[in-house]
Each structure stands twice: as structure tokens, then as C-alpha cells.
Image 1 (tube, rainbow, N blue to C red):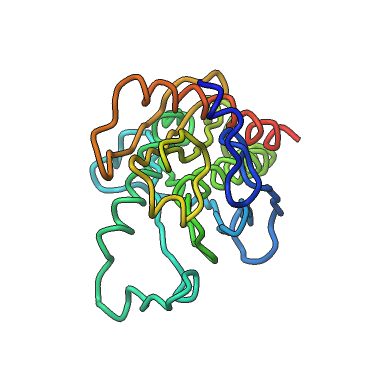
Image 2 (cartoon, helix red, strand yellow; image 1 turned 45 degrees about the vertical axis):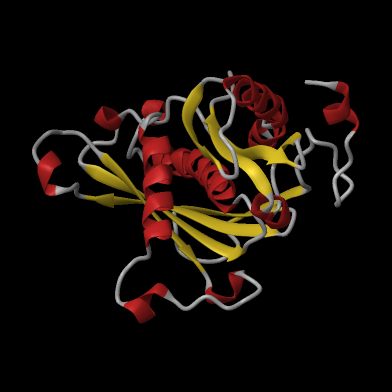
Length: 242
């Protein structure tokens, strides 16, 4: 990381390596096994986790469990109201793509044999969007899953080893020729490259989802963005431990 990146100050006063102010609250409302209301700056998401009997048909009588995820954005989550997807009669492509990302991320850390023939469902709803909604949803869902796991174990439903390790996610990108983490919507809209990293506490990669928006992203820049994200994301894991 060069000195200009270290010294660069963004519009909201953060350095390139700082995440936005974070707050979270557990089980504010709803009947999920656990839910987490997470705020990262002006982005606010609600992630809920439930455990239900039964699995998809292709897993019946296998003894293994399953995990699935849903993602949606409230109509007034954005400055210009977004019509509900039910008005169109089908899910929009972006919601499907993000739901698949969330599902893939968590399936990599689940020991399905210890779930039994049950399905873990992760529901992610964006209440207010200001960039990084998919990353915030993954992080909030990881918090909720860890807490729900304690509940399930107390009820004798599953052992703690169902979740092999927690995960968290954070966006990163290149804006005004500066490499930075945790992009706001304004930064994201002007980014030359935008990448979402899903990582474990040790820094191992679960998924990298990104693109060069205005020009190709060099391998060197991608590696630097991963290193910056790996440092910044520790704050999210520390909060999870607390």
C-alpha cells in the first residue's frame, strides 16, 4: 500500500482502510430463531435464521441437511422508491444473484451431516441501502447463525460443530485512483473496480465477487485490495466475538 492511500481522506472523513461505524442488535422483532439488525454507516440490514424440518427432494433419506438464502430490498431502502418484486410477479436478477452468493458463502462452512434432515434458512432484508448491502447481509447472517446455533444446541437439535467457522464480508474497490474498503453508494457508483470479499477469521477466501467497472483490474491491485480487506474485516470478527 502506497503512502497516498494511507493519507487519503474520503468524503465522510474515513481513511482508505477504515470501515464505517458499526452497530448491531439481536432479536429486535420477528419470530426467527435469531435475527440481527446490522448498521454499517447508512446501510442497514436485517438477517434472520431459522431451522425447519425437511430438506429438498434431492437430499431426502440422505441424512444430510441443507442451507438456503433469500435476499430482498424494501421499496424505500433507496432514495428513489423501488417497486416490490411481487409487483413484477417474479424475483429480479439482482436479488437472485445476491441470494445465491449468500447461500454459497454459508454452504462452505456448514457440516451438513450434523444438521440432520433439516433446512437452515437465511433471510436477508435491506432496510436502507448506501453501498455494501450484500456484504452487510453476509456479516449479519453470520452473527445470527452463531447465536441461533447456541439455541439449537441448548434444545439438543444440533451439535456446535455444525458451523465450522464464522465468516464476514466487506466490499473494496478503486475510486479516484485510490484503493479503499467498505464503499458507500456514491463511491461504488464512481468506482473503477468493485470487489466483495467473503473471508474467514484467518483470512482464507470463501468467495471473491468483483469486476473492473471502468477498466480491467490488475492482479497486483486485487491482491492489495484483499490484504486491505483482510485487515479491516478483523473489526467485524471482533464484534462477533463480543
